Length: 361
Ligand code: FAD
Image (cartoon, rainbow, N blue to C red; front, top):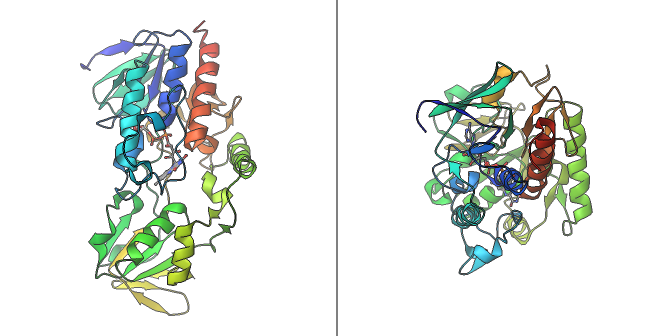
C-alpha cells in the first residue's frame, strides 16, 4: 500500500477467525473487495494469532477449532491430525480459506489509529490510510498480554515472562519456575514445565475444575453470562473463566504427579523470588505470568468507545455493535472470543453493518 488515501465502504481489521468470517459474509452478500470492503492484517502470514503460538500446542491440546463458514478444517489437514502443531495447521487452513473464497488480505498492514473525519472513519495504517463508512474490528487479544502488578516486581533478578513469550519447556530446565494463573494456558504450561523442572503454582482464586465432558448447554450459558456483561458495558470476562476447567487426562496425570498443588497468590516479589503475607518465601529463577490477555483495541481510542469502568456498551443481535457508534462492530470480543463465537459474530456484524450503511443486496 502506498502512502495514499483509499476510499472504501468497510474496513475489516484483522484476519483471524473473526475477521475472515466477517469478510466471508460481506463477500457472499455481493460486496466487491476494494470498492466496498478491504481486509487488513498486521501479521506476516495467514493464521491470525495461531501463527504466533507455541509449538507444543497441537490439535490434541487445543480445546477445539471450529470450521470457518464454507470450508472444513479437517479437509485441509494432512498427516496425523491430533499431533499436528496448531501454529502450522491453522495458518495452512486460513491460507486455503482465503484462496478458496478469493479473500484478499493486505498484510502486513498494522492499523495504528481509527478516528472520525468529516462524517467518515479514517483508518490510519503503517502503509497509507483508508476513509471508510464503517469498520469491523477483529484484532483479537494476542497483542495485549495482561500482567497484574505486585509490589517488588521491578526488583526481581530472574526472568519474568508471559504466556505470549512461551516457546518450550526445555528453556526452563534446572530453574525453579513460579507459574501464575488458573486458566487453560496456565495448566498446560504447568504440565509441560513440571516435567522438566521444579514448579510452584499460584492462583488468585482456587481453580474451578469441572468433572465430566463439556456439553453445549454449559457453553451457551457461559457465553450468555459474558454477553450480558458487555451489553451492560462491563469489561468482558474470558468465556473460560465462566466455564471452569474441564478435567482432561492431562490434568488427571498432573494430579497423580502431585504438581497441581495450588498456592494462593503471593503478596510481594523479592529480588530472589516471591513472598506471601505470612512471611513464607519461595526462591525462583522464573515467574511465568499466565494471566491472560485483554482485547487489542488501543487503535480505537480516539473513538472514545469506553465507559468510565473501561467497558464498552455493546448492542445488536449478538452484541457485536458498539451502542454509541453503530458504524463500529467488534468481533472476537467478549462473548465471541472463541472460534465458534467468532464465526457467528462475523456473520452478525457483516449483516448488521451492511444494513446500517445501506450496502449489499
Ligand atoms: P486472532 O486470531 O488473534 O486474530 C487477530 C488478527 O488481528 C491477527 O491476525 C493480528 O495480526 C491482527 N491484528 C491485531 N491487531 C491489529 C492491528 N492493529 N492492525 C491490523 N491487524 C491487527 N478458541 C477456541 O475456540 N478453541 C481453542 O482451542 C482455543 N485455544 C486457544 C489457545 C490459546 C493459547 C489462546 C490464547 C486462545 C485460544 N482460543 C481458542 C481463543 C481463540 O484463539 C480465539 O477466540 C480466536 O481464535 C480468536 O480469533 P480472532 O479472529 O478474534 O483473533
